[in-house]
Image 1 (tube, rainbow, N blue to C red):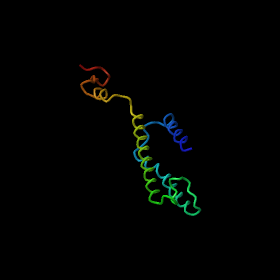
Image 2: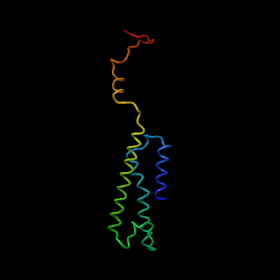
Image 3: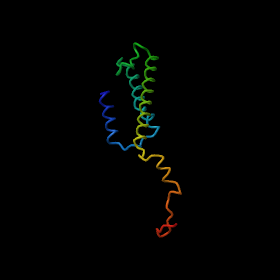
Image 4: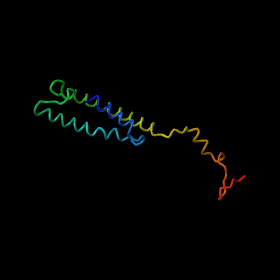
Length: 121
């Protein structure tokens, strides 16, 4: 599940999601669910003694190690999300070269046209 779901998400994003729609805030918004799940799992693990994931088991390594592991994982999520935003922005750009865009916008390259479409000398 932890391998298949991210892989299928990337395939879905690559083939079906319109590119250029992600913003720089999105990776931080994507952290809301994992943070809520982390706090829920830590709270749930204290009462019956069951922890859903080994890296949030506070009985052996302690809260300081669990907090450090969680921060590392959140940083990894943010970096991965930011890389996804960069890829999304690159794939959403028009494929026109900046040099071509520069020459096409110069006034001296344009042909002067009158009101009725006739060319002016």
